[in-house]
Structures are given as structure tokens and as C-alpha cells.
Image 1 (cartoon, rainbow, N blue to C red):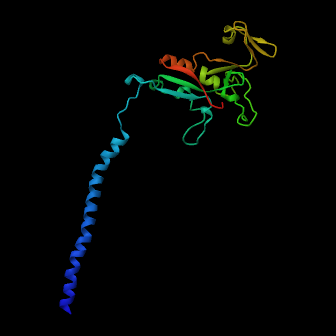
Image 2 (spheres, one colour):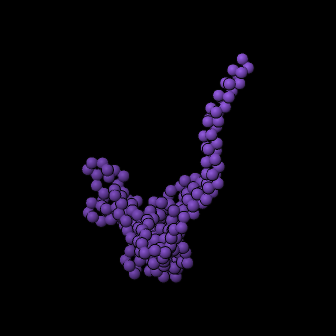
Length: 215
């Protein structure tokens, strides 16, 4: 009986050794992988890429949406942050201001005036202003012109007065351009933050109008 037990143990040892061998090889591979992992991760997160348009000869086109500043994602994107002041102009050769829509007569308008029912049968897009000048419901003027001064009354000798603006029945008029409108009058603030067009031109970046499908 004792001899039989010892024979069974002797037969079992090779089988145990055979099962242990793959496990040892697996542990060895895992150890090697852990040694190489830091280098692999570093290569993935630190690529060498051009950071400015002057580093290459390619045309890099980006776009700034006129509705972007309305986006508000708590803890990620504060409302108003997706504006012309937070664009790295050094990366682009062309920036599209997006999106304008096309009306039934072929004219273009601010995306703010998009007909919400345009996808319905028989619906058409009526003509509308190129830029939405309502500073309380649109970012158009802030994005394009920059920091604004909202004038409720035009005093003689004021900055608005020097630009040709005058008080008129029901609002204001400009004696130089013939433009008219209602208050508040939005004019570029003296020494204020610049708009998209000026910032882009300072850096040699072209600004173009982008037409959006269904806008």
C-alpha cells in the first residue's frame, strides 16, 4: 500500500510541473510588460507634433460657432467660454465663422434666425439680417466686434457722438452711414477686447463665412 501511494505521488509530480510551467511563463511576461509599460504610456501621451501653422506648409481650417458661447456643461465648459478670446490663432490659417443660413431669395442670414420648422414640408426660410444685433439674445456682435458698450442715450461729445450717432425718434441714427436702430446702441468699447475679425487679422488668419445646411 505504501509503495502504491508513493508511485501515485511520483506520477503526479510531472503533471503538476507541467501545469506550473505555463503559469510561470505568464508571470514572466506580465513582469516584462510592467517594466515596459511606463515607456509605452509616455510615448502615447507625448507625441511630437507641430503646434503652430508656421511649423508646416499645410492649410489648417477651424471654425467658431456663433452659438458656441451658449454651451454650458457644469464642471467642463462654462457658459460664454467658447468665444473668440479663447482661440489659439497660431494654429490656423483660416477660421470660419459658423453658421450662416440661406433664405428663399438666396440671401444669407445669422443662424439665430433659422426657421425651426424648416424641415417640415412646405416650410421656407424667409430673409433675415446678416447679424443678430440683439445683444441680450445673441452672441453675434460680441464674437465679431469684441467687447461692447451698450448706449441707452447719446450725449453730445460722447464717444458714440464722435462716431456719428445721434438720438432720433424711436431710437438712433448715424449721420455718416445713414444707419438707424433702436436702443440700446451697441458700439465697440474703447480699449476693449477685440473681436474675431481683428484678432484673426492681427495674426494673419483669414476669416470666412460658413454656410450651414438647414441654418
